[in-house]
Length: 173
Image (cartoon, rainbow, N blue to C red; front, top):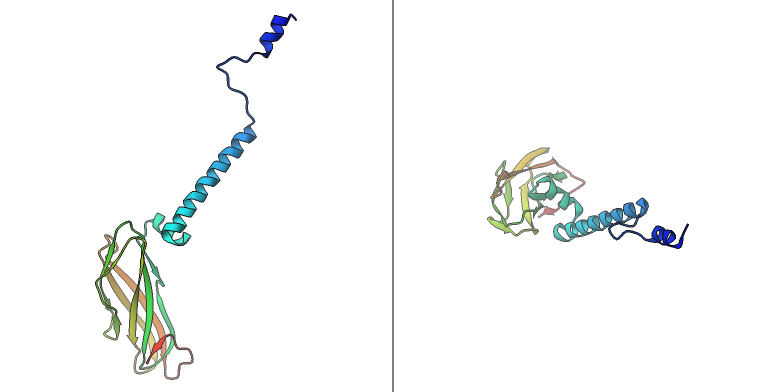
């Protein structure tokens, strides 16, 4: 082999790319994917406060209601009980809670209408006058909104009124 032939073997054409390891490509792609996921999770946590709320938004939920059912547990008869329901706005615009109605006149709520800005939450106070005699409590509260497709939110309210209740949930004298 001559010197000119040896020189030609060591010269790489200008338009060819260097051969890289497939491991390096997979590693860099995985690292990029993990970085993007970390940014997305960080943004979701910063905007919604919890990953669960972000997941609900991605599923199409517009409101996050906690608790979705009001369980009073065992309560004394003829008492006023107060509970709170948190309603978080997952939409990108303000939501108006226009009113609420209980399934009986023994249920009252706080003042309406209430505007909840995007990403914020509002606590709805629910007061119930328990029955005057022992019985199961099976009522519901309907909250009305201006959210298309979610104009009514029905919240079940359950419990047990007893003459001598040992467990009392937030009783208001």
